[in-house]
Image (cartoon, rainbow, N blue to C red; front, side, top):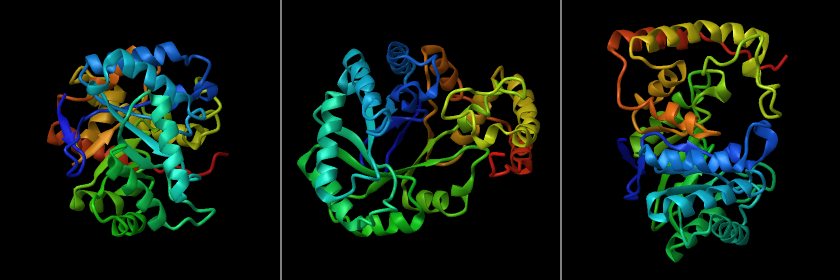
Length: 314
């Protein structure tokens, strides 16, 4: 598995990571359990994946605890741990407390990549205050690198101006074939500045796997009413899925693997698909180590461009 350095941090991560939101609890479906999630993380390590992403809000800390279990099995030095302080804990003192709680749940002394989960739109905590707290944690050695999530360019600029001894090394944002808003400003800015893009939701909540159709839709609380699974949008997406399936067959790859490979073709982009069990991780890793031909890429890009997602759920 090839590796990518996060900014100038010296931290190198596998080009495909593993998102562990699903380890937070039953909102991802009744087929999720802690033991399978731990097994998926162990299998990820065996396959060369070292980046595991979680957050304090996933299951109110439960995901971090499950990740902590896996770290004990894998070995601390074998894992790059990424977690997040919630957008509701961005006061200086709250950031410090949140970090301590995450360290305890993960069972480690240092977090490799500590991310601000989202900018605060409610209490209007100044980003300068939050970034000073993040920099303090970095100086104390409790975190190895400062990062953000769901930040627009204006937010990244403001956050970076508040830092003096370190810099933002990554921005975790939603990015997939159906959600490409970052291509307008965020992606070009990050590529220019050497800030890695960690792509959450790279398979668009599973709608790019080819697993779902009009007669079979996700029933878990997080996805059953998602806009990607309305009749109108599923019909629109079906044309793209047909192209991905056809292109994938020529490489012995699945629809999901083509969708992830498309992201891997973008400079400095690291997708972090989820995995409920080891077999899911084996599929995810199969997206790396090969490339679409120029003609295949043109065909895929044309199909992606043709998709028009209705933003409404009904």
